Image (tube, rainbow, N blue to C red):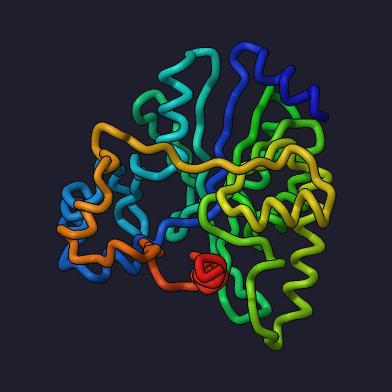
Length: 288
């Protein structure tokens, strides 16, 4: 399987499909605006470019978000080579048929999805249409799959898809392995242990390359589970925009920060999904 990945990459006109299995929360976002047009304008001005199609559906308009990581990744691939067909397949709530739009040389496909209640009480998004079509595609075409991982639903999806004969790249960008979900015991501990077992099963059987931005999870997969092809990566930085300050002491003085102390900075939401509980561990390391 390891050589299979290299072979697929070297084949011309391989189709690279990014599986985006989470529907955008557009219903909640749009509800905060007076109209769907206001939402469209606000997003374009505050976040970035997006395309859309007006449809005869409950949602009235479907969106293609050009600032999503999957689209930016595909754009980067396209800037380096034209050897591949690039597609993004996404689960989408509120539609009854597949919608397709080519944006910046990348084909976006939106598949009807529904909410499925999990045993924990929360909901996941499932698209049977996406699963069925992808099963057929990986049997009849040369395909390289990319997906965000881990998540409980992605695990279930891969176990149903069974992509044993196609290379699969998994990219971690803000979720956690079940092993790290809850720092304290809860009534769902046994479920988390099961999820951990299923996640490791997916790693061993289906995932060829895994890139993660959390060191603890990498160490866990390598040292405790003995998995290979696991490596750390960080998002790229545009240094023309973010310019490191050469005189840090001067900058601390300007910001009225103590010059003789180490500073721990976190930028993001204070939610479990962002691993903020690891801030305490980091703080204790700084004290040593």
